[in-house]
Length: 167
Image 1 (tube, helix red, strand yellow):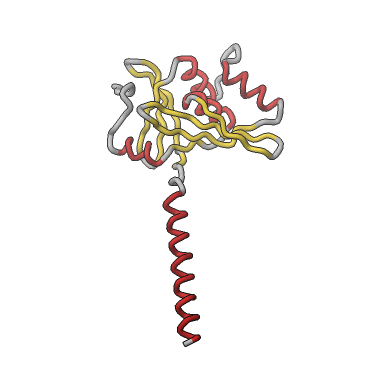
Image 2: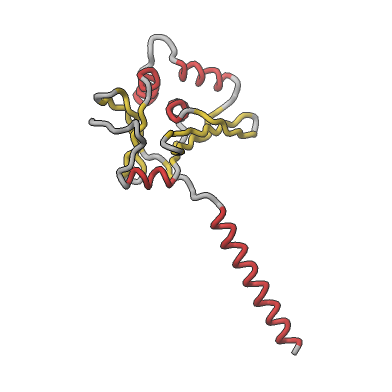
């Protein structure tokens, strides 16, 4: 009888551990997807940053100044005078701060950026415009990630209302 009770307790314990593991996995958000390529193109309606991840392209409209900053960072061509992202890059580097990563998501048809920065062994996450996050990530040479839900929408051909472009 004791052996049966011990076996029953062991089985219940194993089941509880399995249930806890499954719950923890289902509560954790899906891992972001790393962007493989960034390009700036000019469409009929203005500059667009194209993020490529897992063979899907995500267009993000940006203003011309941000487009110029991202293009300059991608090509290594500097503007005669520092643009805002050039200045921010210089200030952050001067004070020993780095951009660790940028994460782009889509909420209610608006792109959002999360800028993860590090200084003195500490990291902090800051809300930012997706375009500013992309520009700083390119300047620092750090990875850009997109949420899996955003990538799924790109694969399905869904775009935010402001991103109907003809390239």
